[in-house]
Length: 334
Ligand code: TYM
Image (cartoon, rainbow, N blue to C red; front, side):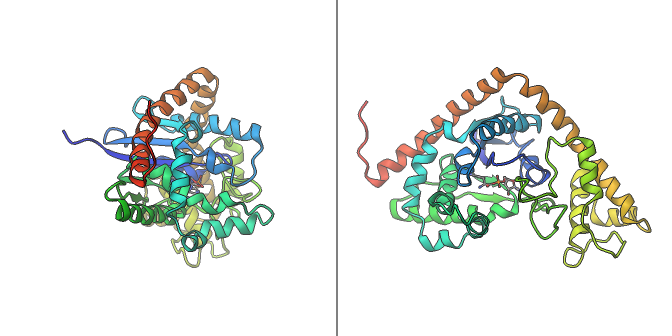
C-alpha cells in the first residue's frame, strides 16, 4: 500500500485565534486525516519574534491546542504538538539559515510589515523567521502545507531553500505545495477592510475571535465598515467591506456570491450584517463551548502534547540526522 501523503501546518500563539485563522487555515485542516498523515502545531518559537508576556504565551499555547481539537482535529488521527517540544525545529532552522539568502529574506512582505509595526524591536528572529518556518515544514517531508494567502510567500521561499539544498547535496527534502482555499484565504478586518484580520487586539479592533460571546460577535458585525452604496454586490475592488462580509457569509453557509446577492436583493446593509453575524455566531458556538470543556481537563491536554511531541520528534529526528550527515557533521556515537 502507498504510504499516506503528508500535510502540515502551524499557527503562532501570539494572540487569540480569529475567524481569519479559522476560515483561512484550521477549517482546511480538519477532515483531512483519513486521507493524509497530518501534523499541526503551535508555533511558539515563532511567537517570540514579537515580545510576548510569558503567562499569556503559556495560556494561549494550551488554549490553541484545545481550540484545534474543538475545531475537529482528533488527536488520535492528527499529530498535534508544541513546536518548542520538538528541538529539531530550532536545529534545522539554524542549518537552513545558512541556505537562505539575505536578499530573499529582506524581500519577505511579512518582515517588512512587522518591522514597520515593531520599529523598536526589529530583531534577528524576525528577519530569519522564514528559515525556521522552512525547517518546520521540511522536517516532516509534507506534500501539502494548508495556509492562508499571507503565508504563500513563506511556503514559496521554503520550496526555494529545499530545491537549493537538494541541488547541493542530492535528494533530501520533498518539495511541498502550498494548499490555499479559494474562498476565505484572506479574511479582512471588520474595522478596516484594507487590512487582514489580525490576532492582536492592538493591531485590529475589527477582529472576531473564536472565544468571543455571541453579543460581542453581533456587535462587531453591526459595526463593520462598509460603503454608502446600500447594495449587496460582490465587487472586491470597489466594495471591499461588503466583499469581505460576503466571503465570510459564503464560508459559513456554503452559498455562492450570486446566491447571496439574490438573497439580499433590495434589502439594506442592516439585514445583511445581522445575517452574517448570526451565521458566524452559529459557526463558532460549538467551537467555543468545546474549547471551554477541554480546557477544564489540563491533564488530557498535556497527554495530547506529550504524545504529539513524541511522534513528531521521531519523524523530525530522522530528517535532521539525514541533513547532518549530508552536510558533513560527525555522527554522535551512542
Ligand atoms: P499565523 O499564526 O499568522 O496564521 C496562522 C494561519 O492562519 C492564516 N490566517 C488567515 N487566513 C485568512 N485570513 C486571515 N485574516 C488570516 N490570518 C491568519 C495564516 O495564513 C496561517 O495559515 N508563519 C505562520 C505560522 C507557521 C507555519 C509554519 C505555517 C510557522 N511555521 C509552518 C505553516 C507551516 C504564521 O505566522 O501564521
